[in-house]
Length: 130
Ligand SMILES: [Zn+2]
Image (cartoon, rainbow, N blue to C red; front, side):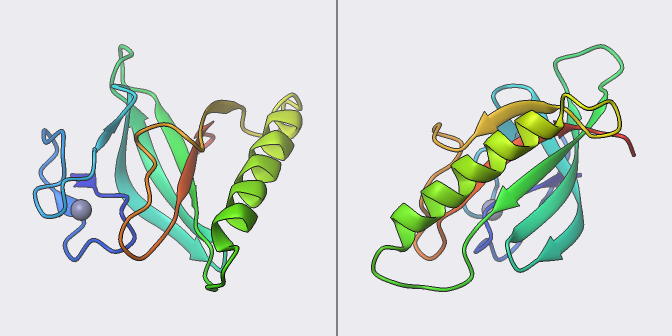
């Protein structure tokens, strides 16, 4: 299974081999590496997915954290961008500790992350301990 990361996607569950969501066109294979396979958590700041790194032998598991603001406002884009950057920096810092997952990639502003019609979102990829 391949899970579409667009929070507004009406049908996020795609067949495993797809590169783009068959319903909304969102890229499913991030940086030609990471594919979300299962939604494992959701809170007020966004969602967490179990993912695999398809570019490596054995396809190691990783975690995708997705941030998107739940409230709307005029400067929401600016605020959200700041929140994403802070969170990524914090996790990168924490990742140097052996008990905490390492930050594998910060996708806060690449093409994989984009503003959909309704929701602004950003992604970071973490090494999995699951
Ligand atoms: Zn989709």
